[in-house]
Length: 219
Image (cartoon, rainbow, N blue to C red):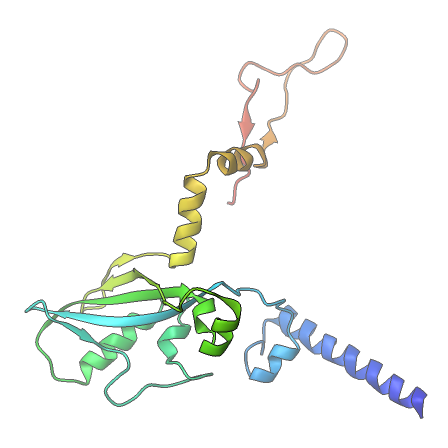
């Protein structure tokens, strides 16, 4: 009996690994159902210390601003309790959601649609009793706001920015000479082949290739 249970457990375990491996190899079904979370290999990738929300805002000709999300008729919650625009990590569709709201509502002429990203530390999501048990400071949530994109009513994108967390990482790198020096010293290079021969048969680099170093091409 114990042997049968052990065999069944091993078979189920290897089968689950096979499902996850096959889904990744074929790039099929990895997000087809929430249950796939237990099969695919993600190692909690993408987890951040910050929580984010997307706000879609329209600017009228009178310079009044209108919130387009959530829509007047309600919003779609694809997974949890937040609207679908908050899942648009790469900011590909949030402006289109706002344009859809404008197409089905009455309003003054609109000049621009803004997608504004709000970020705050996830520790502020802790319930008040948990916060009080861990921190002595009062729970004073601080949010950072960052414009992700600006779109015209004719769908023309006039400005598009990276996520706030990625922007902060780039700024820290640009302001850290040590990291820049390590990045330069660790960059892969390819030394060009030498040309010419010495009297003893050894190769001598030509003047055109002496010291020439070529970075790998992505083409």
